[in-house]
Length: 470
Ligand code: SF4
Image (cartoon, rainbow, N blue to C red; front, side):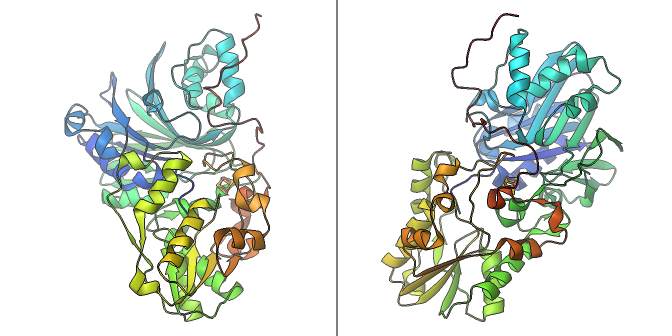
């Protein structure tokens, strides 16, 4: 499934002189969470220094940048635009000078009340330079309404609605927060006396840090060199809403998130799919790379041999990773090449992690036919996606979701396959330990956090109505 891109990854470390270099590695390990832009801020006790730019981590941050950031605290961000377009003004961390000094912020998620908050600030004369939802948090931190409180960061967080994991940096400390529903993952790690916070544990692995625990929903963690402390800004929400799609598609298989190993959950999804939708076939093939774990699970339960159906081009660079459909379609053809010798004359079970618009899946199925596949039985290791995500995943609008508009039979015809089956919602939720703690709104339409139906990715870029005088 390549019709949606990943969204954002966070990394922070306090302690070592090489904090920025380690942050660079932590971002590199989480590159799968965002390929449009990357940035790092480092604090020297008095000032915050920022470097970053568009593209992959290796494009956005140079060796010279890292040398200029040799300070003992750093935060970093890899970005895919979920609100706000792909442009340099939106590169995070965002930094501002406030009456109480400089502050930097970076965000994974989506604020459903950002529009109202921003309208209010613009009405009062505030000037915004970026078009992402994140910038409004900087304005809140500069606002005397929050700034003059005992705990300005906690007070500001209490007025945010939606999905967020945040890193905030002041010259003397880093703070990390997770929204009360726990929608996005955020973990704490330790290497020697140095403390780390990251979106995924795969980032801890790369810097040889040990996993300590997850940041709890509604918790703020403060990091300074050699020290970590915790406080609550809100109780956990009555309804926890961890994103089940992190386990299905987004997170790295090596990561442990929400108390689950991603690879093992995906394997269990594939095994459940084999039990629900068996098929008499010669070969199971994953649509690389995301569905490999699920295909393995399908193979183990069904006994159908597993093999490779495609080669992948690992050298598709930054210019081909852009969030437009035209470029996405090109990328599919460039990235995947069917292995004729493997698939010709075979009855294939093709395992996909999910289907969004269906256009890229159709292109892949057509390429398998062109390579001589005798039968194609598509098995999808998640339920049909019928609803958009309002919490930070760049799904298309409902009209563009193939399963929102068509029956399973119609989708099978559109994709050009001999049979099509999706995993049931019940079976999906049976593959995680605490099924009641998850958001699955894109499958069920049951949104655990109240949503703003007028949300649009470019909502802060369209011409807006003039603000009435007070
Ligand atoms: S709607 Fe889907 S993608 Fe969005 S947070 Fe919920 S489970 Fe995740």
